[in-house]
Image (cartoon, rainbow, N blue to C red; front, side, top):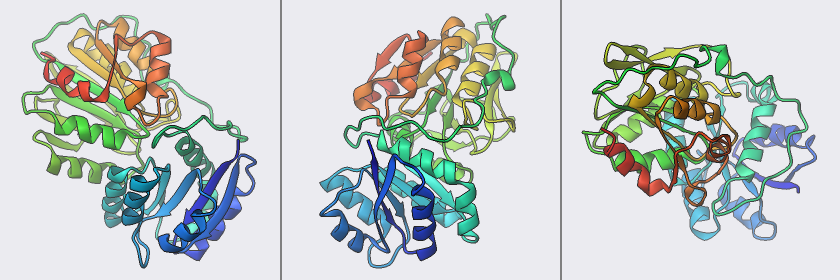
Length: 355
């Protein structure tokens, strides 16, 4: 099945290069381009796209207003194309909160070269978005391109053989998510009180966006939310979000837990990787950790959750009905590492009850 794409961006260069890059993929058809949302709506009326590539700062109507209108009238997967600036990150997060399912970062200069170098990322974002469900989509064709080698958490950590058997009074939680995760995490974290366990989170998100994401959540939540720094302790009432482009690992010193932020190769084609976080939790925390794998495309986190399960951790997966994309939870369930499948609105109570 062909994925019909509409490109909405006020940059003529952006529209042209995106169209050129996508034209070489048999499963993607650019059905139109528009310099602003009002023109896009006129074109979409007669031929509605499967995915919208959307800029956020445009004349006449901004991307967020357009996105909210689409989500109210005819929910459609949207990939946000946002500049790599602090302002761009803030606006992009508003768009993700409004229902966008993917983010494609772009620089303020050198768009043509950047997009040509990021062609595979752009195509992957479109294919991922096409499977999202604002409200339900069907899987699309696989990539024609050969993806990079898919490394496992072995690239950073030893295989869990001698797992932690230490029981401590401190309990921690680890969450992993991707497509649709920004909204899901906002829901969960806003429901938590300051007595919740310390939480480490991997949300697949480009560099420069995670800090703004954490800062935004911090203004909305009773608990403290911030981008993780190397050596941060995991304390009750604190959620640490992995920085974009860096892995996040759990470490233990005596009965206390802290995080390590480190560079490394892509694991399960991601950095940060949920598999890395979950394996480190299995190795360092064992039965003292609760893990939740949430909405997202692919299988990152599935193996790590199985390793946590085998280490006697509590393991949960978000159910299909409440996921934007039931990919990561589904794969974790298939591997047998999930203790219980739960709806999104049950996750806060699980975290608050983890003692």
